Image (cartoon, rainbow, N blue to C red):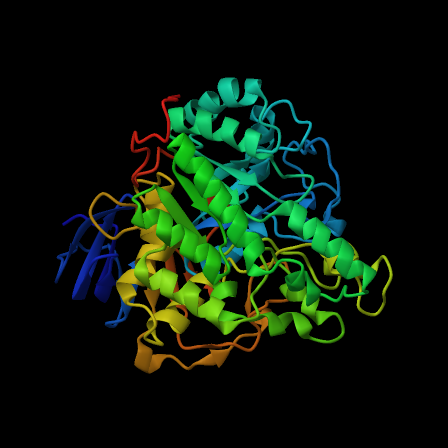
Length: 510
């Protein structure tokens, strides 16, 4: 057969099956055959998997790149910065841009990322925001990419006039809403406006669910008691803060009969609300992240302000029962996807985590001023494989389901997320287990632009040996070998998972 690439002798894993001693034939970037002993013409590239696992390329559906604002610490930015594709003031940018972030992604087995074009409170159009974000990404990505849009000002012009354009012209079929952070949050009335339009257009609505008023009240009263260390970021946001908002937005979604995804769920009580809704057959989906599976709140107690490295929202939880609930939710299907929520800020930079030291109560600083978020786009897939599959906590099929197949289905990436004819040849070839030397992670091993990893010191029992995107090797034996311009923008379709049920709570209909 006329293949460009044949991957031989692998243990191929999909969300449903495992096939041993299997070959994969690729032509023009697409998988065209899967089976044993595929014949190949002379000149075809061949890679021997040596019996190791081959999994679909990771799809990370929650990645923040090239975002030049800090909405998590109450910094009011009314209008988006128009960049025309040029990173403003790069010396003072503390996150990852498309080049560094996607370089890091492929080094960890992720072949597609979905990032966020963000509307600011007084932006009167999301089209201009999307256009400018396209310029920042163009020819700057090592992997394929798509966009969500963060909505902070859902005017009638936007939800009625521009949402259809967003879907039809740009292939963007998801939006993200915040119930917290002053510069970003929406009222329930505004959330209903977005849901109303999203239902008509087949848009998936993502929600960051935390009760903003409780957080503000708790933060003010903690500061009065000088309880401002990084650890008390978690004190200000106990699990009930996430659980109340989760239950509330599920109620709004049920009223509107529209599918939603609850992003980065961290605790048992919110997980239970999602599970209960799913048991009632509501189209409610859940996302969690590795930080809630592998870390506990003690990580925020480290001295020398190092606890700030692990400040994110919702916070990493103190009680191991919350961590156990997250793992159970992954195993039993409550969590549809596991994403990184890669939203880093450098630690040793005045505009990064050190911002928390700028306003008194030294040497402890103020958690209120610490930019929220962690790096994790490179470690997500290896953490779940090493700490999930190889530890026996999840099956290889479940690993593929939550890191690749379900993100692709949820967000309408119809050619991503599986190993089968017709799908893009996005593959991760792991090391044969007997030939891999376990190691403890250091930040110097990673490929992002951030000066730390919250997973420092964790032992990894395997790591991607090859990352392949559309039939091309982009990462091999610890080295990024792909070109920055290779990544393509992916226009998405509507979600492939169940949507509205046409079940109503009253005589009202949209």
